[in-house]
Amino acid sequence: MGLRRVPAVLFAVGTLAGTSGTALGAKGALDQREARKREDVAEQEYLARKALSDRRKAATDERLAAFARLQRQSYTDVVHRMVEFLHRHDRQVRRIERLLVDGIELSVTSTPTPTEHEVDAGDWVTAAIRTVAASSGTANVISKAADKYGTASTGTALSQLHGAAKEKATRAFFGGGSRASGGGGMALGRKAYEVAIAGTGLLVAGAHAKVLGVKALAHARQYEAARAIECANLDLADTHLRAVNQRAAEMYDVLTELRAQAVSALDELESVTFEAQQHAALFQKAMTLVKAVQDVAATRLISPDGDLTDESEALTVKYRRMTAKEDDG
Image (tube, rainbow, N blue to C red):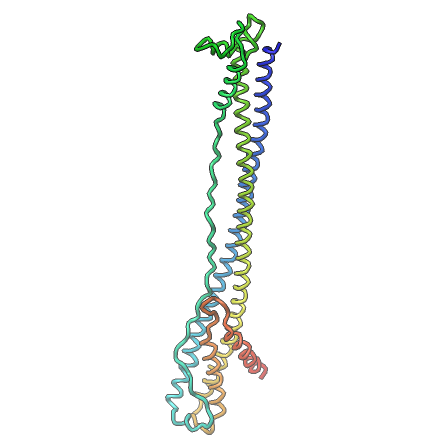
């Protein structure tokens, strides 16, 4: 009776192992698919976030460039114009007491653009899923067990047989004995053996797929965390960009108003036949505005390390008040 159980045991082992392997393999495949999906989502969210940050940076760079152009134009329209006026009326100007005309510079300090935030994204390499060929190892284990414990239908131990006789006797053993002795014979033995081998192979392959799935999910979590950190860094960079953008807009508005007032004052000054004593107040007003334009036009918004300068903040506050007073007047 014990021999008759051999094929049943092999079928049971193969079926159970195959079922378990299939389940593990399916779960592993689902985990790997989920991992790829999570990484794709994290990547798309990061790329969308980076694209938004790039657009904000481009807008800020353009605003800084516009301010730089205004600075250069203000020097031409206001400062250079006042210098030419001073050259034409040098003697008259010198007669005006307590008048500060020194320090008018003829060069414009270029405004650097903010330091670009470059995200160095680490390369992501996904390992290919490889199938484990475990059937040969399992076959050796089953064959050795049969060789050690099995017997032929004649009662001879399989370990004592050799060649084709041993192979046939082993197949018959797996089939529960020869047909003559009431077993399933070599045909059943071959099927039972193949089922056991295939089932065990599926189990090992499924277990391997499950391990790969677990590793893939762990990698996906790490990838999500890395992209989340990069998005947080972009948030910080955008906060800085907003501050730079706001300061540039404020300085642009202040310089635009100062330039307009200075040009108007110079127009008024040059419309008269200049006499030092008679037009001292007019000259002083124009000079005050020219100096203000020069200060703002020469101001560096961004320091070499990418931070807003204290000077730009101080001048914004100072000359915003001046332009406000002029508007009120």
